[in-house]
Length: 476
Ligand code: ADP
Ligand code: MG
Image (cartoon, rainbow, N blue to C red; front, side, top):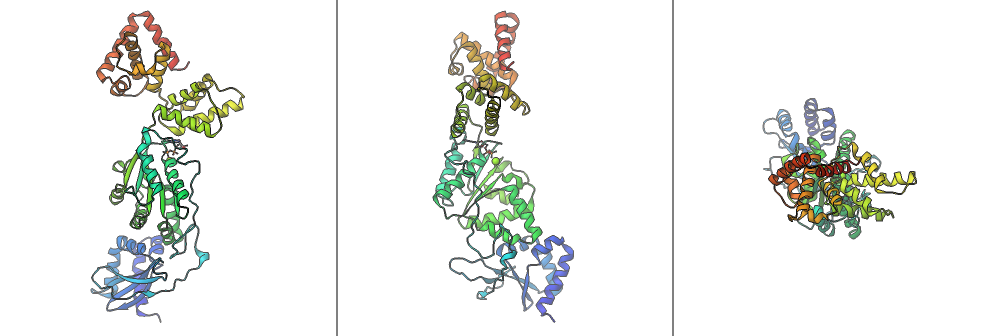
């Protein structure tokens, strides 16, 4: 015959089981052990503080009802939580945590033996109570700070990352959220920080994980009934890097579990580094409490790199691979692919592959053919910079002069032509085109387009310029 508290809890479980999905029941209720029943207070033992919070947050209504039903109107529930091992207290113990907060914590900690069967613990999760784990940090050594080219586009994010790498958990940048468009270096920078930390503090537990992997691990842990191990594992990190957190959008349970891990780490002075394709204000489907935490530290953006930075990135990549290319080819690559660094690197790699397969020297022509093929499917747009370069080459002008405010006739004409083609061949606004061409306003650009149109109808020589340039720009 089982004891009264066990019977009562058994009865509670029966009702609970009928009211929630089986999987949730297995995850959150099967591990609970009823401890005692005294003065209408049923004490249940839960495996962790997180577990307690989760129950309180998700099942408090149901728990209140069943307790009332089984124990009467005065019935109450208390949790007994197995604490993690820590430096000052190496023995796991339980404390009482009243749901209402009214009852006193008069019980002194009781020792509870932890029965852990190591064979049952699935990797990468760990034995509850363990403080330190050895994990593979999942860092890619080539994504180091040394290989990350600094430019205006990434200065803030890079310096913040550098500061974090030198003092993980010890700066105001916690969490550090790096955001920006596709292929702009978020993953690279996140790895750099991890590598920097590992180099300086080899004993720190650093983990890089993609948000998708994190979400899958969480789901698996629910299936396997190892959610606690999952949480313990992540709570043990000194530095947690989660890439592409926008993936958590709309995934409430994953956000929940991440919220608790986040809090635990943050409270304990551990460093959190996140990346996302958007700033927190624009993230949809994300819980408010998470968003507000994302804003606690620093959000730093990565912008599209300017031409000089793009060239420097290509040169660094070539240098790293022991490759040399004619300057005009490098410039051409950097001119034509101007938003996505990954794509630019891809074009470089294809170019090298093509050249070595066909045993051809890499010339500007080969580069043009290649890039044309490479970017055809990505709705490629000729850049304003590229148009300016082609126009300047054609009229034998320096690009700086075109961008200057000078009103010399031949410069004005070239500038107007560059504006005309920018309007025609790019999706840029008039204002943006003006800004690129000597800081003119949109009305000036509009005027330039009209002038070019008029002249092309009345001036034969001028018409030839346009036809020539159009050919060059469309690379025929
Ligand atoms: P994201 O995660 O933002 O989509 P990645 O970090 O994967 O972008 O970067 C795409 C590619 O561009 C990587 O190969 C990366 O090394 C390279 N890259 C991006 N920014 C830089 C930079 N500032 N210096 C050198 N390489 C860079
Ligand atoms: Mg990435």
